[in-house]
Length: 326
Image (cartoon, rainbow, N blue to C red; front, side):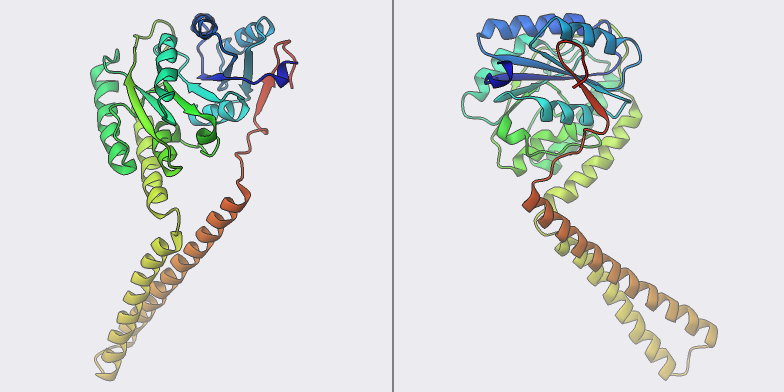
């Protein structure tokens, strides 16, 4: 039975309003994977498309036993789509790529060859990128430098979706927000060996780009979260405790200063009320940060023991190759 077959390669592709691109993409991926002579599956995740992509995916799944389709009820973003695809696939090697035909399936064999040298993650580098300079290239270069400085992973192109992972590495990574851009950095936390190779990049032929400058702002917010995560994952109490100690120390100094002013009879009633309020607020802030640190430590320890998974069943559907919902 198909469910008992060991899948060697899974290709995960999130798509959103790519009705014209999806049939061409599926044919290209299938042609490349069949030439490798290994068992494979293609997992297409529709992120709430409204242009007919969903219906095309259903038709493709009915005619291809190696194609699996996941349908989101609404648009949740690329990270959520990738997370759903990673969770659903069964391959020992997992390839991720975009669904807009800008990534080239012909690069998949080269990624497989590179990861066979002993790496856990191999990322593509769009050396000759076919995008607009000011809207895509320049913001991407700035973001790339920031991401590399935070994650300490030296890549030329962190934003390239074309990557390959070993299953045991990617299954431990939880994605949300715009964290799909930071997968190599998250993999480094797991001790992964990371490499990069130049890949092809094509101009968009059909449809419209989903990128806008507001996405850059979201990436920066997630980068700040990632920075905190990477530095203080093992002991969040130390980070929040230091902030709590700072505010508590300010409160103590303010209290001593207030006591000195009272003893010196230089404080009026109105000034005393302000000083008491300030001391009280500083101590409360210090206590709150200590409490946040304790809660964060509890969450980290609980997550480490349970190995919890991302709950995705509430907002996606799977489609079998006969078109029925699973």
